[in-house]
Amino acid sequence: MTTTLAPPAKPWSPAEFEARLRAVGQDRYHDRHPFNLRMHQGDLTPDEVRCWITNRFHYQRHIPVKDALILAKLDSSRLRRMWLRRIEDHDGRDEGEGGIERWLRLGEAAGLDRRTLLSGESVLPGVRLAVEGYVNFCRLRSPLEAVAASLTELTAPDLMRLRIEAFERHYPWIAADGLGYFRTRVDQGRRDSAEALDLVLRWARSREEQESAVAALSFKCEVLWALLDAVQQHAVRQRTVPQRAGHDGPRERV
Image (cartoon, rainbow, N blue to C red; front, side, top):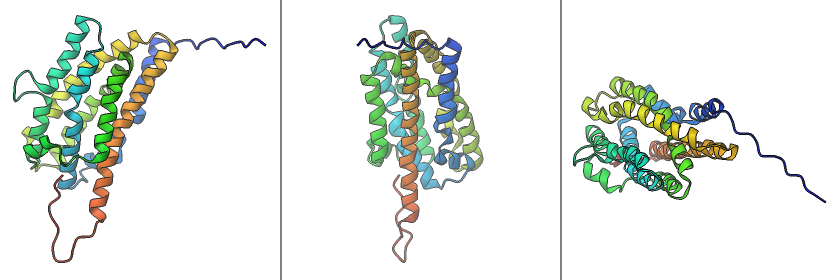
């Protein structure tokens, strides 16, 4: 008996493929996570804000690591120079520059100790697992999938603008100069997402490749949700753990 194989599905048109990528961000980006919604509505306590800053820093400091892994997969000098700029954006060209430094200043503006942030001692296990999963994804998957996973940046600039407004309105105890990371990422995110989208649209020629790119972006959204899940669950535990009678308990370290 001869088995007739179905012909492979036709690729989506470039317009449909882009629309499907953008739909992932619109439907699954972490701006809709309950913790982010509470943040933007001004409902977080100072300790919850500090906990988020601490744990998000663990993700931030690994961005240039995953970008170095992607850069090593690129096969032309032009592409490597383009991607190298992302590493410089976060690590800086010189000491005291870059996105990681700006995030440390955000932590300091919120009352966190720089040495504690750098030590990573207060990072939650769930956050470590999520970040490790993303870094390993970029290490092990194809250049197409690794670049496609970065396309959460399509939605990030709008989130940065929303976050700046929320922090200025609801968390005035954080000094304004601590918000430099968010302000810088509005333009950087718009540039980076345009470059990455162009690569993904050109590289994904078959339906299988297009679907793998959409799946990679979905995975990245799950990573960001998992990070916030861990932070939110920690916040719930802190609210429900009874304190010993007679004192308010120690100030939360994270």
